[in-house]
Amino acid sequence: MRSLLLTVLLFLTAVTAPMSAPAAAAEEEQDPLDQLRAIPGLTVVSETRPAGYRFFVLSYTQPIDHRDPRKGTFQQRLTLLHRAVDVPVVLYTGGYGLAADPAPSRTEPTRILDANQVSVEHRFFRSSRPAPADWRDLNIWQEATDEHRIVQALRTIYPGRWIQTGASKGGMTSVYHRRFYPGDVDGVVAYVAPDDPVNQHDRDYDRFFAEVGTAPCRQALETVQRQALLRRDRMVPLLEADAARNGYTFTRTLGSADRSYEMTVLDTVWAFWQYSTAADCASVPPATATDEQLYAWIDNVAFFGFYTDQGLEYYWPYYHQAATQLGWPDLAFAHLRGLTRYRGLYQPNSVLPVELRARHQPLPMLDVDFWVRSQSERMMFVYGQNDPWSAERFTPSGRDSYLYVVPGANHGANIASLPEAEQREAVATLRRWAGATSLLRSPGTATLPDDDMLVHRRPA
Image (spheres, rainbow, N blue to C red):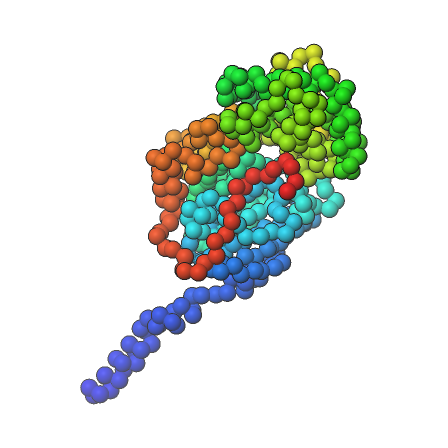
């Protein structure tokens, strides 16, 4: 009897005991490629394997109009940098298109958290544009819903904590996603994200340019603009020659080289402070500079090729969004009165083809601004003190949300450039939101390049 009882006990112990570690690991570990292929509507376009990672280029079937699925679908591009299923995921929304041939890189939050990263191409950019395109379907809610569906799909593989990030327009896009789907991610880090709730009331921008840097630098920059417009009759032929050499045209957007020239001159001081620092004030040419020296300096700072049909085409979705919902800097240019020729030129409809121009809708930005101030939580905003896009900034609520301003920084402001105490605080907050542990990558993991999350107006 004892022998029989002992046999039964041994059998029960064997069938109920936990699996050995190798067996358990085999049971738990699944090939992410198989898991991705199992998600309905998701296509794996390619895979590469930098050491310690797997990098996938993906395509996801999205409704053209989330409110009316009968309008059909389009393919939205995204990439996945996979490290492990048990680490956080950073959702990176650049606000623009992905590279034509995406390569693995890491945003600052991805590096801080040693996380996976999902990078999403904004609808209507590059290949993520419906055909035919109804541009009424390009709005902040539709893109937020694109991202919501992506998060829902990939949570089947990555059920842990998610952090969303982006810079500039990407920072704005991450805020809009948070506004419409606050339960999708566990926190947002938005870099240099402008907030323009009342488009006509842009005194903050004019105040910024009246105070940024030193008085001599501000005066020198204004002198460059004035000289460029005073010499217009000699300078525009330089642009026309430049256009002939490079195949630039102006017919679809601004309409003429003269209008393009004026737009570039108006944008020069903005571009200087967006990409340069106070140390670069020494490079500003004096009033005695030759036409060629003045043209070359403006071209280096603001790039005359930008306000051409070829330079603008990639940015049409952004300018359409700016015209309809996002808003734009409406500057006074008081120091240039009497020198400009085109009233109301400095606005997004000026750089769009006629068929894409639209009326502004003020309510979406007012709604987002109010929600961020009053109801949002776990949101972090990082701005640059000398960045014009940071002049109108979001005001986070008191609900575990934070605002940091990097002294002297331009549009490239980030957590790493904060003063040491604030940097430690921001990193600790981000890691807390993500539930990050001290889990480190194994030796031999590839060192991936950092992604500053910004687009640059001059082509690489």
